[in-house]
Image (tube, rainbow, N blue to C red; front, side, top):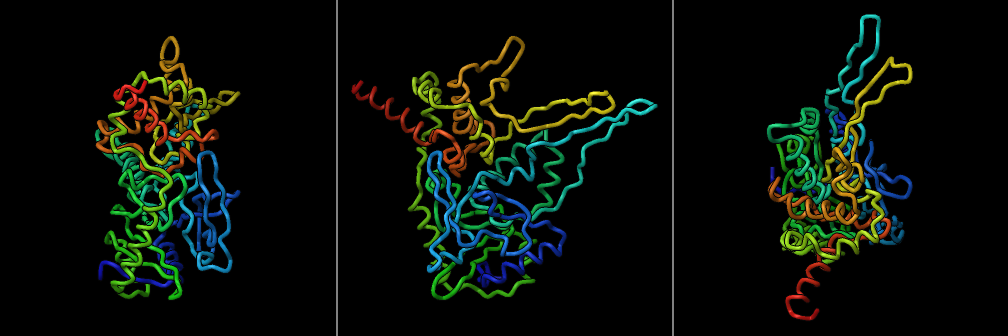
Length: 381
């Protein structure tokens, strides 16, 4: 099978049908309450075709494309919304066990561990990078999460290269996109012009190759491959943000910088940034008992380092001030994550900027600290 194939847009339905025949529940982008979310899809008609997003700090809007233009037929012209794929692998709330009282004592019911085969359709390059981070945390090392690992092994990934960047995207400067470099079973690049609506397809795995055997395709011509490459390059050129390559060193040198207080004066400590982040993995555990004492269960749920109780130890929380909590979050992402996992904890998706109610910009904060540092070195202050 050649490396780069070409299929017509109606063959996307054949891919979905083939995955469903194999027992996968097909999950993809859906339009819900004015945003792009990830949920069950059974056909290409479930995709929000003909929409694009407007994203800036604290601003998100989905708007319909010009109905008279080619963009109105596009399946993937939008970028990312508030959902990330991690919620299907690392659920926001999960029961770990439940105990029920009976005459003989308590009967313990363990959590459901049988994996649910998923096929993710429309995974962006920055999201593939985020999944790789989650894999390091939950699937590798001495303390792997067996439930996550078994679910991940049962997941089929169809990636989509971005041909348009959102206003808060900066994946190019993080080297995580907009082109997917690996980690997928199939990768699509949408082509839409006077010649028709079609997709370039790259095969990334043996399961992907077998699925393509059910699809009508032909080998992509060099000019079509170049068209796809140029479309992705156009997305690089339209990135709304850029992260400095030396961000980790800048933050490491400026642990007591006054900028942290400035950020704290704007930050609401709402934890939106950590909830929408595709790599954040912090969680807490709570025990809940029924009022009659007949039933008790232990739950794991997402937590955030922006919550005051997150760093609580005997005597009180370690990070009492919002400035300390924001500093912990951004330095962990951009500095200490490299030491723990060998990569950045940020993939440049821009969600934390878009969904921050006051529009705090992680790229702007790093740049501001570096600018003030440079001003001191040059004797301007």
